[in-house]
Amino acid sequence: MASQPTIPSAPSPADTPAEKGADERIGLIEKLGYGLGDIPSGLYLNFFSAYLLFFFVDLGGVAPAAMALMLLLSRVFDAFTDPVMGMISDRTRTRWGRYRPYIAFGAIPYGVTGYLIFAAADLSPGWLLVWAYVSYGLCMLAFTATNVPYSGLLGVISPSTEQRANVTAYRMFFSGFAGIMVGVLATTLVRELGGGDEALGIKLTMGLFAAISSLCFLITFATTKERIPAAPTTGSVKGDLGRLVRTGAWIATAIAAIFGVLSIASRATSARFWFKYVAGDDGAPVFLFLDRFGLFLTALALGQVSGVVLGYALQRRFEKSHLIITGGLMKISGIAIFYLLPLDAVWPQTLAQLMVGTGFGFLMVLSFSMFTDIAEFIDWRSGVQMTALTMSASIFAVKVGAGLGAATPGLVLELTGFEREVAQSAEALAGIEFAFAWLPGLVLIPAGIAMMFYPLSHKLMRQVETDLTARRSTV
Image (cartoon, rainbow, N blue to C red; front, top):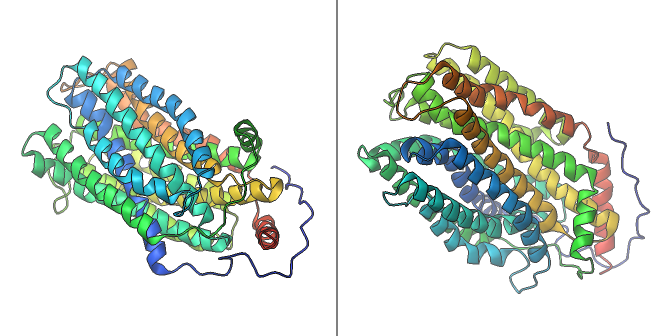
């Protein structure tokens, strides 16, 4: 376990009024407005996990390894764009604030580029791969330009740790709600809108989700405000990055988030293949209008919402890192139970997937709350505000985890001899099982180990909040 960070001497409290916004409670409209801003990323990431690899590989004929390479290269691109966007927004000064303008002006490009990914005409596999590189790359650039400032906004929406944690719970609730939208609506919309053409159904469904996403970002911009005033920017880009990567809490949380999201993404990406080729599912509804794949995605999302609510309720009593480890154990248990059940045990599998989602909800609500704590901790320790740069780690972690979670199954399918639209060999079926069950469970082990080194306790964060309030009141 890591030792507690050394607490520097607190500045002497001033007799001037408290920091602007320090005691201001965030109203319900603003909480809902901010929370709606996570629906866009929730819709995109859940829909991409469910359909991206399947669309290009099983429907489009692109080689799994080629798609895997595309996804991996896009993550390398993110390694540069995410921190750059964080530094740009940290240094932005407008009458709308530092972060909110990017949410407003990026809303439409975000929707358009998301739709374009699945809007390819009838292309050969080679040209379809080119389309994937261009459209997905543009979409991830728009994702960075909106979601990094959106996460940065969480760090300045209130100087209170408790208030930020409360807003984070709203954010994660709507993230889970987006997952429910994908689970409940996506498979049905794909089936009905496509009229037997699955590729067309995927394109039209994504168009609807893209339009909803743009609208949500505009509502977030209109209903939120930034309460922590911007400090003069004196640090260099190199110095800010160096300060960030030397912060142990940031490293631990980023590792946990990457592996935690990778687990879920690998499972969701391979699920469509698992139901079609391993379980032999024909796509017929099994509950109301939901087929087995839709029920699987819905159970994950409902569990995530439950985990968000439960994790938020427990974080005041227990350390956040301990709760994330507990959530990881829940995910591993749910994955193992699902794996051991008969292939046709629909409802027991649904309950096991609900457990997986609950553990994932713990990770999401707590890790994003921890990133805001880390931003405050860096400010407290160094006197440098780099909120969006710090928060860009959350976006980078989610995108890296989601990208690797989609890329790894592609590599596994290629290596084990997967062939589209035919009965699979024993090796190919084992590869699907590995991507669907074994890999999602194994990668949670390093995530749990990383959390053992997270040093920011409740006691320390109370000291951070008190000292920063006193320091900012003198400005």
